[in-house]
Length: 131
Image (cartoon, rainbow, N blue to C red; front, side, top):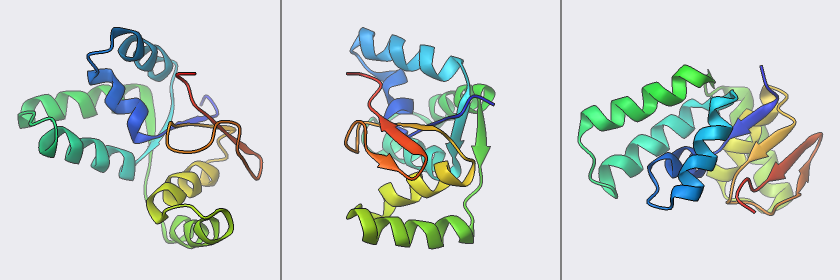
């Protein structure tokens, strides 16, 4: 598996009106990597609540992501690590849980727009794929 983990915002750019970002997100995800159940849940929530997409379109998006990425289940270990990361790096709990899930699968890169580009969290680096 490619040693990268995708945050929810990268997944949601598949639906962006900005063609450049939508195409970039598709290219990144097509190469494979990991997402967590949290990413899938957050994407579904945004699709329904903010974007007002019908359920069939939500299922289609999630199926596309699951077809190219391995899905990491949420675990108690990730929860415990997230608490530590949130405290140490002053992260929101949900951002810390994304980081913890990525670390759990030993991802080398976390693609996200939510954290500082280049931030090192142990052996993992945060990268903004759109800069």
